[in-house]
Image 1 (cartoon, rainbow, N blue to C red):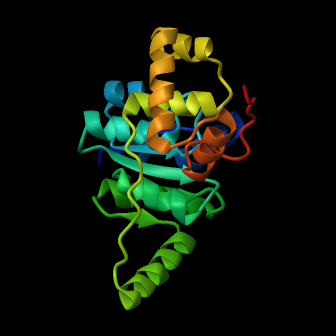
Image 2 (cartoon, rainbow, N blue to C red):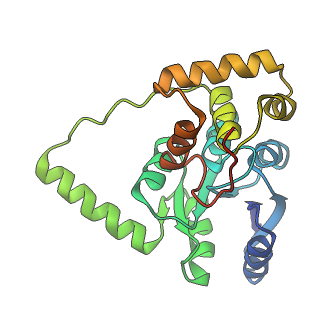
Length: 225
């Protein structure tokens, strides 16, 4: 039987090595590529066409959520399994909104990741047991109360999301321009557009928004400029 091919996108080396060691024990799963940031994950997903992409939510340069959005836009049939240290509802719901096939928290037992890979490859959604239980209770509560309309979130373009993340990570306009290979003037234009759409007018508030929206983690070391 042909093994399930996997692209592993995880920026922390010690975590990535642990996941690799775990998955090597599974005869029906084969890791064919590793990405250390979101932008590399997008490139490798297009190049390798793996059956499943295991994507860490908090990735440098391009976060896992936006990387997933770009992968699914380029390859609608791709199966992306989100991996995170956080099981917060905001992270999970955002992942589902953009089309992720499942969500596994890093505190799960060792066999859960392999099971999750098999399930999403088969076309089934998968959530860590704790996440699944909480989602079930939320759905029951929402049904009892009636579906309340969700607040309309500001719609940022893919490029604006990239600029927002880099700004929130503390990158100066020149660093952002160099990373995205665009002009400083274009960065300033996107930055201004982001602030107008979000009705936010300072970098510190942009950073707080990025954390609350799951674009970066609160543990990320940022420099407010």
